[in-house]
Amino acid sequence: MPSPLAQPRRSRPTARAVLSALSGPMPLSRNQAMGASERLSAVTSLLSSLEHLVNRKQKRPGGLNDWAIARHGHARYGRPLRKLLDAVADERTTTVLHSARATASAALLLPGDGRWRGAANLFLGVSGALLYPTHRYGTDGSDQASGLVQTATGLARLAPTPQAQDALLWYVAIQSNLSYAVSGWVKLLGRDWRTGAALSGVMRTRTYGHEGVWRLTKRYPRSARTLAHGVLALECLFPVLYLKGGLLTRPVIGAVASFHVANGFVMGLGRFVPAFAAMHPMVAYTSTPRSHPAVAGRDDRMLGTMGLLLAGGAVAASAVAAHRRLRATDRAHGSTVTTRHGNELFHDGTMTGHGSGPVVVLVHGLGAIPAHFSWYTRALNADGRQWLAYSRAGYGPSRRRADTPHHLNESVDDLVDLVRAAVPEGRQVSLVGHSLGGEIARRAAVRLGERVHSVVYVDSSHPEQLDRSDQQGKNARFVEEMIGTTAVSLRLGLGILMQTPEWVRNLPATVRSRAMAEYADHRVWTAALREWRAAERDFRSFTGPLAPLDAHALVLSAQHTVDRDPDHLLMHKDLADAHGTGRTVRSAVVEGSDHEGILTDPQFAAEAVRHLLAFLGDTTAPAPSGQHTATADQEAR
View 1 (cartoon, one colour):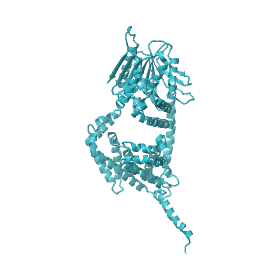
View 2 (spheres, helix red, strand yellow; view 1 turned 90 degrees about the horizontal axis):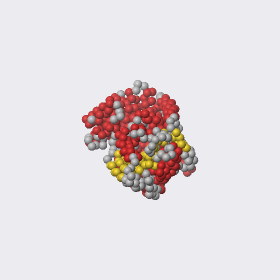
View 3 (tube, rainbow, N blue to C red; view 1 turned 90 degrees about the vertical axis):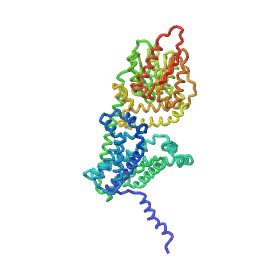
View 4 (cartoon, rainbow, N blue to C red; view 1 turned 135 degrees about the horizontal axis):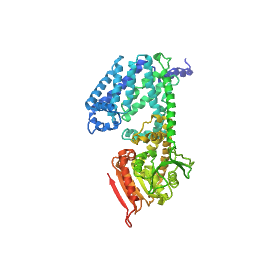
């Protein structure tokens, strides 16, 4: 009779078999990996082209992808490329291309291993890249992922040697690892992902939300946090499947595939399932130990090559960052003032010890630099007016030496000390502040008293904007996350990947290089993050009312700002109303401008400067005896 003690021993092989089935590598041969990847990506492009063929009305006048409107976003490209995009965007050409893409995608779903498959894949990759600029709405990351796989697979199919094929398969596998790992580590910078509240927040949105799942996250918050942290860990640690001979390949790929299926169902991202799963066969191929018969002869030199390229890229990125730092902190011109907090403020301008009339002091916004005012300073020079521009503590050449936590009044103190030290005694100032710089200028004007001739608010912040504006109150946390993410990225040397923003390209040619150097320096973003946190604390606790000011005022508003957020127009009116009677108070809306364009776009800056110079001219001219000079001109154009 068998002993009862022997029973557990018979269960061990079963448990081991289950564990073996759920772990270990997923051995695929080179051809199997290419075949599986190209078929999965073909499903993505087939669905994408069929969707565009069904929704052709979006390309017609008034549609989301109306090329007559969308083409303006590519105006900076050369004429040959613009002509090509115009031809591709034609409705007949688009229909032909999508029909051909649908046919090629369907053909790739058929069995076979011929070289024609390489040509079909390359056609899908190239045509997708050409169509992408004309389909900005309705095209997403799934189309980009499938295009990457199809281009690499097409080249691999046509490659003359197995070594070249392996290099291309490794390329896709590395891209897959980066897509998950980088996404995960970036999410770590977000407060909601660290606290586990992100899942509930995403499910609440209109675009990607799901009311039923959102209700479940509110009903079971602990489970929702655990799931959010699980997704974060899965993305951050995706490359672990290459460890221990691919021991974790099956569970990691299975979990990621399940994650995409869930996204497809809950968030409506159906094409993401085959698009990103198309990379997994190449990940499985490259993570299988070379000793396995399925991958015998695999060439892994691509991994070492990528390592060398990354090392070289890191050296180049460090060199670029160092060069930009030297440009951003260069003090070849201008002077420095040390404030009561020990901060060293660098300033430059045309102010001299002689002259009359107020000195225009330019106060830049959050995460901005003095170069934002370049069109203004050109106009001031042409009008013969003296001006001074400075970088706040931590920006550009200026240094923050204070050893106490930053608060908004520190920046106000610094501006007050700068005016008293740099502007000759007896000369008045006109403080021109943009965005947060407008609020700093307003507070400094209260302390400077009679030294202030006027305050010019250029699409200025308001201390109650986070409470009175529902839009800005909700966006506050996203502002902090965006600034923080950029600061960390630049600190890691990724500034070499930063594209020149449109506002820099709009500046005068002589200042663009220096402006880009400052903008891509992590110190600007670190200072901006410090200021934003201080400003948010200050604004949340502000009880009002605004302190009265006995100075002239000009309030310039960007049309896009007040159109999107009418509450902000009312707050700009508050800024004007805070200036006392007997003073000139004017307001104007610069038609067509946005928050940044009111400074950097040549057309909108010229309109804003026209108001500024007219205002300064009117308020510096002597008024007839006994005449009341108070005005309130409302110009909304």
